[in-house]
Structure formats: C-alpha cells, structure tokens
Image 1: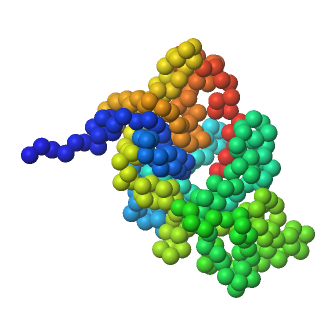
Image 2 (image 1 turned 90 degrees about the horizontal axis):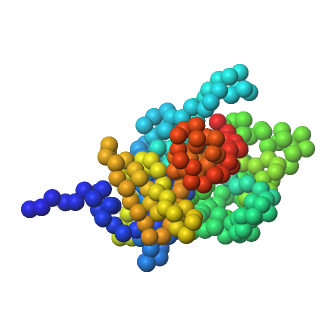
Image 3 (image 1 turned 45 degrees about the horizontal axis):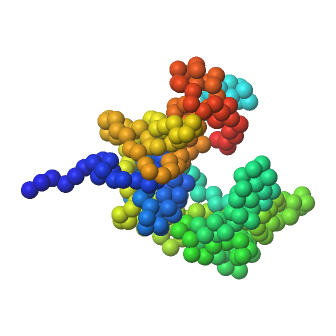
Length: 324
C-alpha cells in the first residue's frame, strides 16, 4: 500500500494561477476571496504554523501572552532616539493568521480623510467611498443593547457596519471601574462623545469595539474567519512552515515580472511558479524586506547588501510608523 503524498509534494505539484506570500491578516483575506472564482487556483506560503486550539490566542483575556513566544517573529527595533537609545520588542505574528492572532483585538477605523488622501495621491479605488463597502463586507457587528449603551457609551451607527461578514465585532460585556468616569471627564473638558466613530470620523471620545465572537467568547481573526471555512476548497492550497527567501523575477519585454517564489520548508529549499500574479502580503516589516531581497529597493541599500538591482525604488521600506 503506497504512502500518502507529503503536503509539500502536493503543493509543488499544483499549477497555480496566483500565489499569496504570507498567510496573515491580509493574505488570507485576499487568498480566500480569489478562490471564490473556480477558474483561479491560489497557493499560500506561510512561515508560521496553524494554532487553532491555542488558548493564549483564542481567549480574549489572555491577550499579550503570545508576544515573545514561538508565535512571534520577536523583532527588535533599532535604538530609538526618543527612548534614550533603547531598543524595544516589535511584535509580528509568526502563525497562520499573522498579527491578527496576536493583536489586542481593538477594532476601529481611520478617518475618511486618511483614505481619501490615498486616492488623491494616485491610489485609485482606495478612497473612503471605495473602501467602505469592503469594510462592511468583512464584518458582523453584534449590537449593544440600550442598557449597555447608556452605561458604557457603546454607540454605533448601523449603516456603517456589516451584518454577515466573516469577522465578528462586539463591545466588551464588562469594563473596569475607570471606564465609568472617563467619558464624563472628557465631556467636562469639552470633548464630545462620538456616537458614530466608524462613520468617517473617529474624533472625540468613544468606546472601542473588539474583534471577538461573543457567543464563544473567542478572538475573531483571519485564520478562523477566512481560511478555516474555505480550507477544503480544491483551488485553495496552503503550505505552512514555509519561509519565503526571494520573489522570482523574470524579464518580460524589458520589464521585470514576478513569476513565483523561492522558499524553505522544514529545512529544504524549494520554489514555486505561477501563471498569473504573485501577491505579497508578508506584513509591514517583511514585505519591504522581501522586495529588497529580490532586488527591488533603494540602490544604496541593495548595493551594500550585495543584492543585484532589478528595480530601483528608494521608497521601499521608508517612512514606516508604528505604535509599540
């Protein structure tokens, strides 16, 4: 009786139309949405492992316990001048679901002007009016009742929230004692309560929603919300424990085109090619890193690292700001 094929053998034997690098917060959304089309075959490369039953991820009250563990890339910042030269941990998810498995489950949305500025800078289709339908498509809001709203200022405007999306949002059932006072304190200082902080302006004081499924009281994140319900689709193929080293670029009519990726899986080097697109979703740290490792970036940085320049772009990896 023959043995079953290894997971990696199945992955390498599949003819993909699309390859998603990174099975994290965004990558799993993109991959599962693409796989809704039957003529598309999507491969996902993820460096971490699944952790569906991990209580440190699933139980909301244990948020923060996964930082600095096997589920975290455990990056450190360079010395920060504003912190007297200290370097601090920079948590990034190394697990199926990415940083959506590690974050503190605060569910919010930026102001309308932030998104409209993207469109004004040339990113057509990324303005507020363009994105709002997709914000709503992703979400199932569990509404707070009148008593909860009165006690905790848990307001919402239903027309800006989804009702049947994969990710669940809800207000916490309990709050600390200080929460009873800070809304009124801010009002006394002239800062009004924002009763529609998802409606295009988050200016003012408001109680934050959380990405928690309230029936099971579990974290709602991309691995469980997007991948698990679609994991049996034959046109959606995932390989975990697969760290991408480089995007394969080939010259096509004088332009470099992404054709696949080189990666390591359980200590062995492999490569995969696609007939269509390579979609880079490796996060705010490793997406620019992979571009640079593939020869796309600031020529000075690439030359110093001994990487042949394919596409000179000094903006790669620049101007990143994060809250740590």
